[in-house]
Length: 141
Image (cartoon, rainbow, N blue to C red; front, side, top):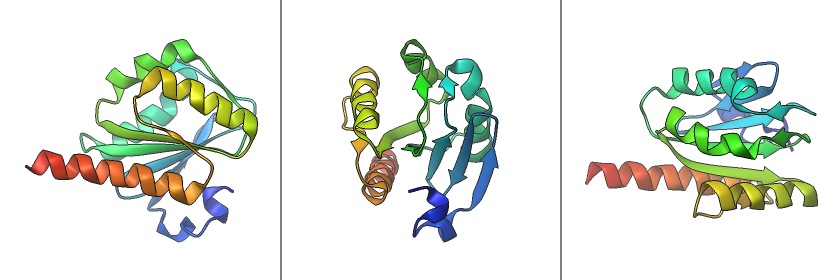
């Protein structure tokens, strides 16, 4: 299910599109839906990264990749994104197929110690949002 077809579509504050993806922005999280057949590397992800930086600035945020399409990721570039987005404090992948779940498991093993793979869009959004809120609460103490 795409964000546009979900129950949270009316909560989207801003939306941007590039050749590789559509980004849906909420208060503390963004949802990225990459286009069918895209190969993601640092170069092809640059417009989305720019939009994330422009929208969130230095504020902590979470990112949910909603895998509604099939795409590939350059796993060697995954660790290079962390320094570019140091305020991305939570990440999740919502998979709608077995292949998507397997890819999310691989991504999870490379980029974080927390579980990032979700079968349900709403669970993924809620989990990532709560992780951002925990980070915000911790930074206030």
